Length: 502
Image 1 (cartoon, rainbow, N blue to C red):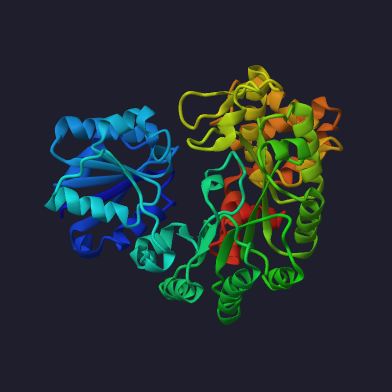
Image 2: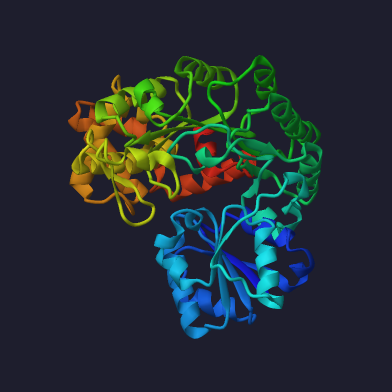
């Protein structure tokens, strides 16, 4: 074995689609190439020991915003204990501002951009000569029809235990400046029949959870309908063993034909991720985001009221030109549409994105270390940005988790953002923590806060007792609930199951 492909995934349930593309397109080198994945948080020396166990001549590492610091430690140790092994980096984190990065200085080579064909070509040069002259190699973008699909490289363990990432297209036609996809010229579709054939094979092997990484699933409605029909056919043929599909959709593009298809999906089989990011037209214009807010709101409302799709809708705090009051109005507007989850994100400066052009004019201050989170702007100072960070964390624990489904309306009242910010500030003052708060303790704290807001103790307790969170200390109830969830929802993600049960 000469070549080892590796990366540090954010969690075990994630399987690297990028590495599998590289392996599928190694050509004559595929037989001497192996894939080995790790999870962030693993001890560096353990990773290095396992990487070197098969005595590779080349190690290719996928570098992302969530793993770059730990990967740098891995590369540093590799070059100390096995300097003869060639280290090749690739991935979005090292594809831009490349020469500024310590991990790039440590490695032997870097491929920027598309690596599907370029990694194999570089390996051939390293192994057979002539040796590459340039450390930084610009990846070549081949026609999608020439790229071998990687789905047969998902193992039986992957299918049984992990989310399977798939893509019917690459790229994005939109130019939102906070997103790396803004650098794409357009979106490129894979051959749809060939792609669906790969999904058919995965389904036959037992795959049931499919997460599409396409940036704009509903850009081409004919393709969207054909993909959705694939899943509908599987649901009709195997209602006792349902599939589950996750798509990212454009919020203001939902024609009637697509609505008709969406209506056919039963509960627990379809999830949409929808990026709103901001409802402020001035902010949208600043970051080159084209969005019909009225149409987007209308479509989200229709999906919530008429479909069974589970809705994740994204907002980003810290965008240029947006203050807390503006963000709060957008948050309340979105909450009124009643999506199942509001994904509250804090702006991050991804390397290469055009958002950096606003740095001086809007006083944008970012953390120097990954994930390069915004620390302050001219509209939101550091202290208030930290309050928003805590709000986002508590919101995920309380609202998005589905564990407080019956209590949440009482928490939010008529002014959701202001009420939850008050709870967030109170929780932090009481705990000095945003992580590792036991669920039963969190439920008790929420109950105390409600009582301080004038809710009678017996009402607050009754609400909490009706929630998953309020029963966290009752082991026998939790075991029964878990068994019922497994029985009725099968492989449905637990968080969505809790929302459905509310």
